[in-house]
Amino acid sequence: METLFRYLSCLLLLATIPLASALKFDIQAHPGHESARHERCIRNFVAKEQLVVVTGIISGFRGDGQTLNMHVSS
Image (cartoon, rainbow, N blue to C red; front, side, top):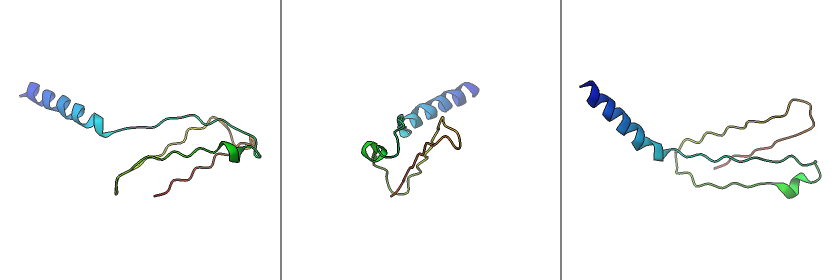
């Protein structure tokens, strides 16, 4: 019975992997007057009522003069 449970658990894990996806990219820093020319727009289709998690990992520190603006909308 334990072997069957382990097999079903592995099968369930393999079935849910295609349901998750991710997008990863790096954004280069630019001086304030150049930043408008280097804006990036990433558009991905998301179904209605779908959970979206946005994580921003930055390497800067407070007061270093760099700014990262993100806008997430429906």
